[in-house]
Length: 332
Image (cartoon, rainbow, N blue to C red; front, side, top):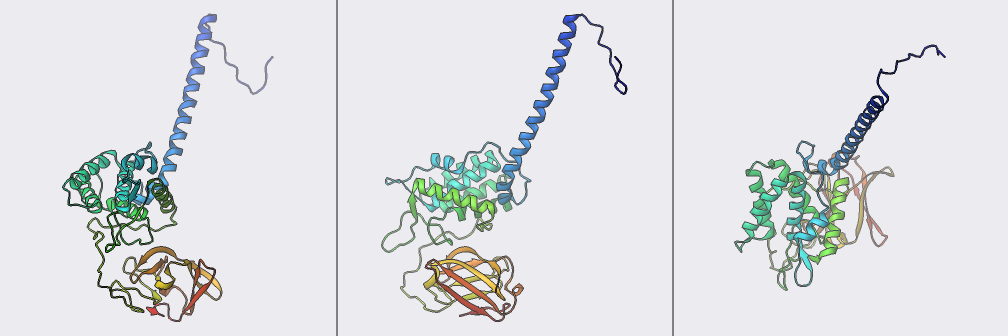
């Protein structure tokens, strides 16, 4: 029976066994092609999934990355043993993060970093933080990563290694009665906190700016006992002065400093105009007179004159500050 519009092909002039063999071979080839398509699709999906985190490190996916890197917690758990009480400090936590992040970029860079750090630590007079910076510099000099990538990785590791409220420095576990520069936490809790912080950095919820490889390491604070109440806080004292700084030195964008007497109770800092929320600041640690820092995405002058800063406290209370000229530095 002939069907109009359908082209008929003659069966090849083959014996029965030959025909069956040809049919099975064709089916196998078709299956292999389909499997290759699936494999390529999976590879693309995996690559896309990895892209988000590496974007936070490199700014662009121009550096080859490994696709089977372990999680930070699993890699750091093998690297850090903790002290007799099972505690680890911020400086060694940063080292573990640097090694983990370098492994995502280049296993060779990770290996060179580890060797350089161990060599620096073995001298007996180099802190983990200083050794980590020296090791990163070695990786850059070896041409395994560029300086820009190294500084981005350094910034991420520095921010994610924080175990206390002071986000401006890394502390070890050697503090004492006259030396408050200590920040330690039980190993598993510290790794879980670091993992969470890394995830927040990846999502853009926490700012982790690049950090220079020659940035000063933590030093013991002055113990003169002098504190300045209501001053700018630049002398290392305590300041109970609110500051609207329209252009920060770091990025030229608005930073708001909340007085030290409120700093530990701040839940959020928001800018309003005409009753409308314009932006919610990102917490950026304690410093400059023990004040809480909140950074914004644009200069202060980009906000309308007459804006209001609303500070929400964990206690449920709120504090407001009126900003008449948003382009000016204002203290209250």
